[in-house]
Length: 365
Image (cartoon, rainbow, N blue to C red):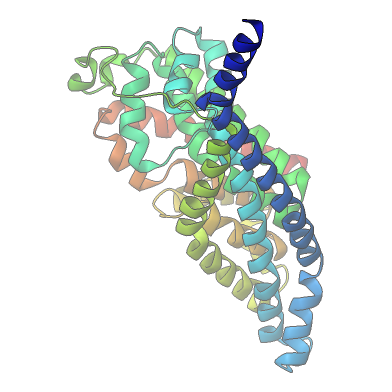
């Protein structure tokens, strides 16, 4: 009997579909890891040679003279374009995997019921890794507000998600280094936290559209997915296809504009209109940035070129933040759920925070 039972037990294990699926998933993970190692090595070797490549193409292949405006612009474009795109692909893939742990439903559950101060901090941090764009603003906003997330906490998320995202950080790191990227990350999070806290203190729930308040909790239709590691890796690949597929053209256009500034704008020219000495440059930069339609991918290469030509860091950061966090298209979409008074308060509080950041960095750096 024991032999028969052992045989049956062995047959049961060998025929267990769950065990077979687990083994197949483990094999899939090993394959991904084995593929990733040589790909990363090749990526690194190519990345390290980009400067040599851009110089060789500009002055040897195209045979352009050194010191020429056109030569300088072309070399800038040929170096920055592959550099930024390569960084973007790598970071978006990694952040895509991280984002698979923070679905909208899980984010809502983390934020629901939290006290405002802690909630503002969590919301700003979650905004970095949570998928957010203008098209998802309305359902996410409704989902958060109608399920117990305080209004101020929701605004901290609303500010952080578009402004402090992986695209902005990777481009800033690639073009300026980790210090400027860290400064942007810290100030962006601070604005999101404080602005959300201020809006929460103002108790402006009555300025939500009436139909938003009538939605019953739990009716937001958010469904949480259960993903394994193979699914998360696919999520990373999908993030690359979706995000890089959408923004690469903005990257190229932004770098093209930056290349033109780099090659043709005289040294120090921007200092006269966007330098530290021009006190009015920060509010003007914010006002110019608000109606512009762009994202981090398109605006940061331009920012790089402006700073290179003498513009003050604080002024340029204020311009960049206003373009990304206070864009007119986002305001138009949010009008579906917010009354004009709340939109004006949101824009005023965030704009004031951006002004402070601009002046502060012009003084300190």
